[in-house]
Every structure is written in C-alpha cells, then in structure tokens.
Amino acid sequence: MRSDIFHANNSAQPATQLGLTLQHSRCVKACVNGEVYARQGSMIGYRGQFAFEVKGQGLGNLVKRFATGEGVPLMSCRGQGEIWFAHHASECFLIDLDPGDALSINGKHILAYEPSLGYEIQMVSGAGAFVGGGLFNCVFQGQGRLAITSHGQPIVIPVNPQQPVFADSDALIGWSSGLQTSIVRTQSFGSMLRGGSGEVAQVRFDGAGFVILQPSESNFGATASR
Image 1: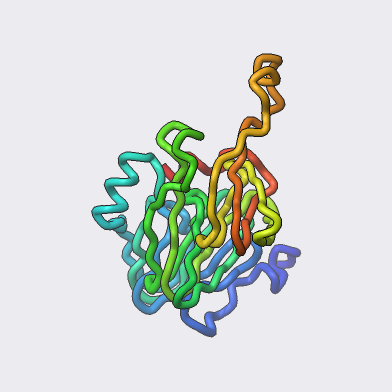
Image 2: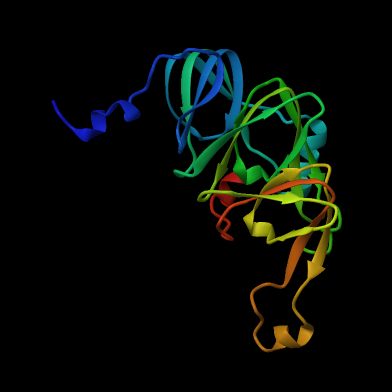
C-alpha cells in the first residue's frame, strides 16, 4: 500500500525518554511510567495499559472553579506506555519550568502537564471590574514540563519596566507571573455610544517578563475549559 500519509513525519516513533514531547505541531505525546495529567477529553490514542480518571483539583481550586467558572477540567492518566493528546487541532507547545519559575496560563490553553508541577487558580489583579466575576488564570510552579495550545502561531512579547504591553483578554495565553497587571480603557464613552471600536479595554502588563498571545480573539475551545 502506498500513500503520502505513510511518510515518516506522520509515523509514531518508539519512545526514547519519559515525559512530554511533541509528536508534531498539533499533537503532544506522553511516554508514561506512572502518571501524567491532561485536559479531559484530549486523549486521541494510546498504546500500553492505562486507567483514565477525573483528577481532583484540591479544595481551594475546586471552590474557586465553582465560584468563577474558571479552571481546568483534568484527568489523571495512570499506567505505562504512550499517550497522544490534542485539542481541536490547535498548535501545541512545550514549556519547561525550573524551581522558582511561575507561569500564569489561561485554563483553556492547558493541554497536559507532568505531576511534578502544581497550579493554583488566581484572580488577575485589577480585573475584577473588567468582566463579571473577574478574570482568572492558573499559576503553575514546580519543576517539570507543561504542554499548552494556541489557536494559531503564538506571539511572545517581551515586557520591560520602560515599555508596558497591552493585550486583549481573549487573545491572552499566559505571562510570566512576576508581571503586574491592570485594566485600561482605550475607548471613550462617546465612541461607545456611536457603536464602539470593538476595543473597549485591555490588560496592561508592567515589570520585566513576557506575554504570550494567540492571533485570535475568539473564545475557541473555551467551552471545554468550563
């Protein structure tokens, strides 16, 4: 049988190391001998022996998720073998966190992470009056690898104390958690009465670090994060 679909770039190769790796730009592979955590429903295939169960988020995060509607619906993938994860054909990226690192990620962009990492749901400072109930993110810490998704190729914008960065909340994937956040309005009341520009307010980032954006302002995949 012959077809371009059998090209080596599309073939699942034997695992050479434990942990998360990219199968390709829209799929993550986890080689597991124990446990890995992932978004519920993101598993597209596996080989080996696994049990998939709902993962508890801890009492604090559970209460925050019920109160805010934010967070990550997670499953524990426990066993031995290889698992492939994807989410609506979004672009996938791996981030390695070291001790002392802290990364704030929008819950709808979390695909999978290693159990050596942990997260806490935190309210984005200054955003309480911006949207009903506020704006919340998941702050990851620890040492390990995290897989995230982006609706299109992301943009990473450096932030320095002399030049703040402004972003639409729907385009935000995440940022280095040491940044200070606030909400700024860039449309006058008169402009809103005339129909509006579509850009009412943005999240402002001050300090030193980076902001990760996706080239889309849609809530693509948001319903899966609730």
